[in-house]
Image (cartoon, rainbow, N blue to C red; front, side):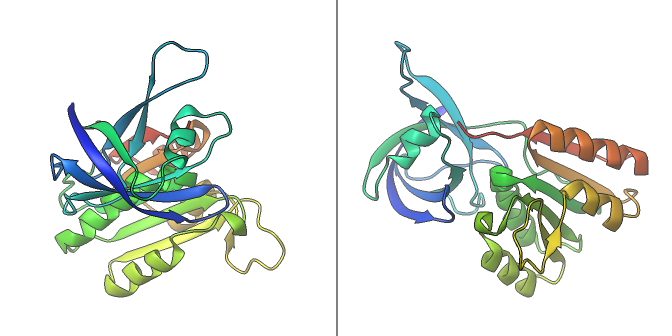
Length: 236
């Protein structure tokens, strides 16, 4: 993996514990990667003599080569997220990459279904943006599971994408909505059970916790055979 030096160009708090961090590349000045791949940081961990390596998916599309976007949540005691949350605009950092076998394929004429929980949406967001840039005839659908209203983010961006690209649609579902929620409730598994009648012409990308990946895979297999690409996702 190649080493990159970068400067934090923008920080945006998306929720109470999710942050977007944009890095401007300094040396080299651009990066080539596949949508869905990740970069890695070596960060200190208390009690260990050497740094530990923590991967973070790139949320921006490959066409944006001079800057990359990370979307991550703060984990109490997590060395990776605590390091990145400690950066400020203007801070400099070093990372290695790109890497990862979870990336957007060319599945011909198959429609694409992306399923995420939590910040597992990060690599899928890169894939969706890359796919929409292709301007193909395939439909692109995102099912995204979050916990409650305070965990919502990227909703305006996704609505803007849906308006600009008629082939794209998304559903955000809350597993534990608070009173007043008028949107979809429940787990993403239920969305697939109710809204995906067949998988005959489908390619599926899953990113989130192992439980979601296992359950969704089982539901899809019950409907037939299709390509399924998976990435177990966690922040640390």
